[in-house]
Image (cartoon, rainbow, N blue to C red; front, top):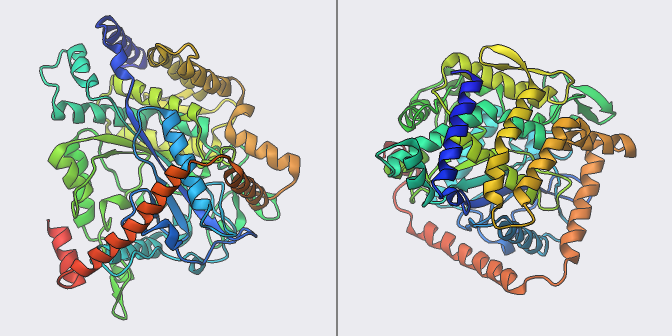
Length: 527
């Protein structure tokens, strides 16, 4: 089906939803954010201190944890029905964290600070319980397989679910006799496929990592140019974080996980976590009695597979992500392609979140045929092209087996979003979703408005290196959070109590362990 025909399908679905009198059911989805930040010293070096005890247990805290490194804090919000509530909570979390960091800072960008060697990146420690040890061994394996430097990259993940009342109305629009969980999961996979097709637009609009500290590239082959003595860049890059310089690691280049259905997605991930991989076997699972990785399979666990977007279901204790999906279907999607923005103290802003909400609705409503291998190759190529060269004049992408101008394609997608934003704006005279769309449309007309261009312009104006700019912004953000008045003392007290309770939960987990670690792993992978 051609792009024009697909647009007709989308227009018919949108019109049917509006004519049903239930289009307002698109509003009120649940949204949350996971935001990662490196802890650094006042001079911009990676902190070697342990995760602050006052922030609670990184293993059992629901909202303040660590990612790959002991120095990589991850802030996880609950879900909210509005963006302002979400961002207020995220702001409060930053205030709480900064009250317990002493002189340390949270690094303001996705690409890491100056790090001389892998050994400087401390792997996260989660205590002595079997589950805590498994989390640490998994991270050891990531370091052995890909290098620790790649794991020091930060990002912002946007979690979103459509309102439960929306699905029956959408089933009626599609003429489906089903509107239960199987229907919902299938429709979320429609969205996933279209995000793969069109997600390059997110890199263009919000990518803000066109430069890296040269220390990040030490020992690696690359084609980046010198911007300053300590900074490398690509002139038209948008998000080197989402390129093969960053997360799109060549080690996973041959791994394809289908999103044509939930069954195929689970099949491919299950195969990857159960299939031995000779290069990883050569690294050894254990050395000197200590684990180097959980196993020698293509993936140690499902989460090792990096994708721009994931289908998710909150898992039960001890349950693997694919098991949770098989048990109860897709609950929400996790958009993983957002760079941490140095221009926003919490790393993200309301315009970005509003646009993403409308964009996910677009991906849901558009016609979404299965993705064949040939199209998947084109999809991957488009993402890499925009990550490396997204602001290049006259850039062409692959669209339906031929080259097409990126700018015109982007304009079409944003035009399609107009009606969706009007629906999301109903009842609000400020029209925030339409305003958010207008901000992004301006970036298509004027590439200088993109965050990646803005960052390069800032570097050119100040003469700073990337590390100097990021450190300056990190200091500004710290001052902003510590000077905010009045703080929400009740919310801060809530965080403090959660930190205390999480430490108790970790103690209880460690005391409850039975059997050996090897038995725990065998049970986890056999389940």
